Image (cartoon, rainbow, N blue to C red; front, side, top):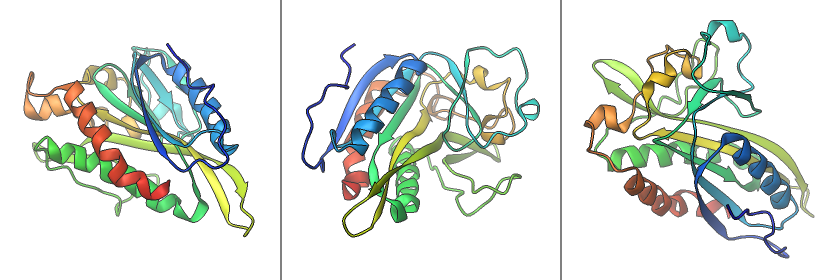
Length: 242
């Protein structure tokens, strides 16, 4: 696969680029993100969104303290420790993942996290799914609840999860501080939800996750179409950060 690590250096990168990576191992995408993050800090590339579909893998975020309470072994796929926010989740086929390599002012981080959530809500709504935010609620760990949710048979179900990692990118001549982001969101389109059974995804019950396919029915969702819709929506929500 053609890498994105040799893009030419620019004096100032202000454009937004969207790259479709197709299917990729999680470890490969993590290395790519780290490389691009350094390039973004050095103004060698513009803000960038990486769209990808992973082979089965579990990832542990930095908010996970006690693994014994959220994981039931044996797991059904490899596991990675990462520095994004959040706890444990699953990535795999049928799940649309977007990673955001963005350089933004430090005070804009809250608005940026909101934009990620708003994008997932908009994408769900376009499928006819009345998804909603729970950002004004907190979980049992005292953290604000994020992601796109849908009420299914009277229960809150999560259709998209999100979590980012930030790194300092220095200050400009006026002393304004900047950060560069990594990671992003994972949207369950036709994901095999059985992979979530051994884990308490995002710190919730093992059965908290749902998918577009579970809500609408098998055969009524196109992964490629949703990817196209997502790509079309990204500039609306993120051009203001470029």
